[in-house]
Length: 514
Image 1 (cartoon, one colour):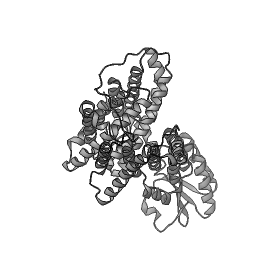
Image 2 (cartoon, rainbow, N blue to C red):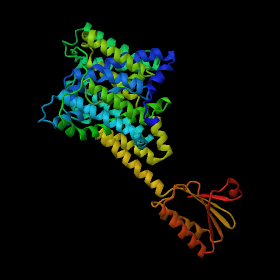
Image 3 (cartoon, rainbow, N blue to C red):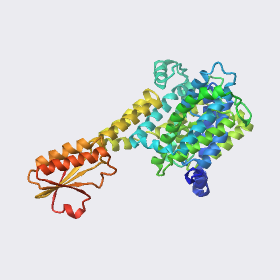
């Protein structure tokens, strides 16, 4: 087996090099994320068309797997709304299957895991390099708007029937006259509390305390009877491990949906991991993320769960609570297991408005206004990519928005390859010409045309030196063009040389940029 295929326990390595100064933040982040995780996972399971308890099963083994294998110290793995919707769509297409929905969902998770591992074996993580910095900035801003918009109903108590976040926001706006004031009061209190504490005492565990205060208010004031929505009864028990009972026809039917889930889930996984890595000064390994996501899905299939990816909202929540390493995920896992065994009555009275306020608070931290300004000042095209990604993610679909932005970034990359900057160093009787791109069939004619125009602008030259330092791996089209160019210049009385030019060669010459 090649060495690169041997699993690297990057998460475990980071935990073994643990700094005790991080412990307080990881403990608080783990408890805070666990408090939000429970209702979210229950909702994701229902969204996937499965029993609510499977949502909690979707974190037991994956949390531990990612803590050992993952390359991001902050990414929160587990159920995600988009993947849950794709799961529901895939299972809905198997109306004639004799297998249960739980077994089919587990099979889908297995297939997703296997495809990820194949991608890891083929080292396909380089595809994540198509996700440029403008896409990351726009993606996180779009996700933050989705997070905030998705919590309007929880914060106001206004029921919505729209299938999109934008539709939900519009419904809430049109029905503000029927808001539920106790729900709104709890949400606003927690929001104001979080922002105030964050400003005055950034290291204080505001998210956890805010939720606990809101829970105490609901329990003490019997506000559930007044219509304040709470998490409700959590089903007991732990997952039973085993292989799903399915047929070969089920495998064939779910293979294509599994591939689609991998494309969406891995893109979301890497986008979120790289965005937080950029914010906090570390790096993530794209191939390692394929491995971690694959093994996590395999483990979840074994636990009769469903396909999973990462959660930007939980990652942001963990970061806002002070999480520094995957120890916070292990803490969250322990808390969830305790919830499943002992703490279900306490969590049952958690107000959804407080959890919604917590999400809105975490979402505001994902919009990086200074980075948008930096992109605008650096290059308008990159700023445009960020805005297009933001709009695409917010108003269409997360996947569609990212695909559009990646497509546009590839178009811009191709344009820069086909029409790169040139540098001309002109002397009395010779000229040094540098073409800042690899030379190939796609831009060979562009080089010839621009170089000949430069020659016409300098009729006195007798020698032209073509700088070849960046013109690497030329193809046959480029080689033929250079030979034709040499003959054409020779007919004009100009000698063409192709070589690397030392800095001394350009001394006392005039440099021009095109």
